[in-house]
Length: 387
Image 1 (tube, rainbow, N blue to C red):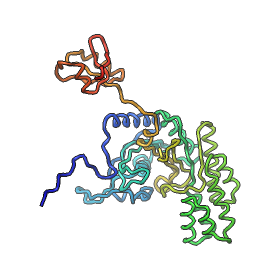
Image 2 (cartoon, helix red, strand yellow):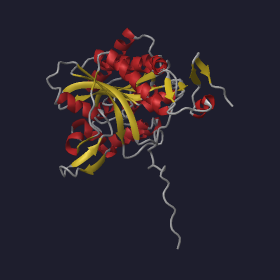
Image 3 (cartoon, rainbow, N blue to C red):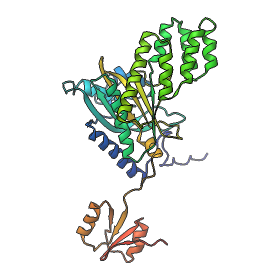
Image 4 (cartoon, rainbow, N blue to C red):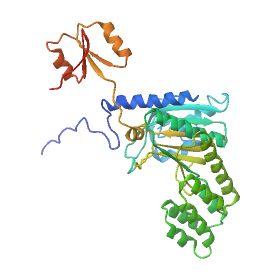
């Protein structure tokens, strides 16, 4: 019988990872650049806790992410706690309770970590950073447009110049299918077919009697792409009243965005209805060219029982992977006997100073060992020679 080797202390559960230098510093600086951009647009920062009582965290909009949520028993209260997997429901709780009397529209921002029970094939990480905004108390195309425009500015603040916003209407397909009087099995089958963008399956589910509905759905499916083309297809479609109101709202939102940012790239997918179940109107997903992963997502929902709200959550990890490579602040080695004020002046200029804690016999070699690109000398900064 042999003893099993001890577990590797660096081994982490699947979907979790350490972020090391310099990436951790770059991520933190990028998040703060995003948050600073949000603040410049009047969005005030809130900081909800990581854990809440299960029955409050998963109430209302939070119920849509219940399957992604870790739970544990609180040894203090002996009640079940839930660890957030999405921050939006927490901000909605804050808006409807602690900030219920605050003037509307209420503009809030947040940044923090979320933990999910499972990752996906495209996004395997289970610990996910989020930075986002919520605009509470207004239901208008101007409000829908504002969150897109504010997020565009935040992405520019971290160096992203090429990105697109894919606008969707998650309630539109359910509204069309409900008005068609289809049985539940047919509606489920159609939903799956539309989700897969499978035109042949749409025709098969509706048969000859549903040829007109199938033709309309397929036309909308094929219209996905640039906003003008998709909106024209929506305008031409024979939509029931509830779906027509949604389509009109999307048209007004696109017009409001282009009125303030005519060059912003917008695409529309009329029949895309994936997303959080709490979304009630115009939704948005942010992409960068050539990348499949989402940089962010959000849309319109109800805050509490009835208050209109909309927002977008950015995923800083994905944003950084799409943005130009950023470099951490340059490191300068400061020998033991150098003037402290000289080092302080370098920090004010944006340098990171690595101050020796004891005299070094070979300062240049010590600077190289500590991965400093420069060294402070009596004559100013000198470049550290590479070996």
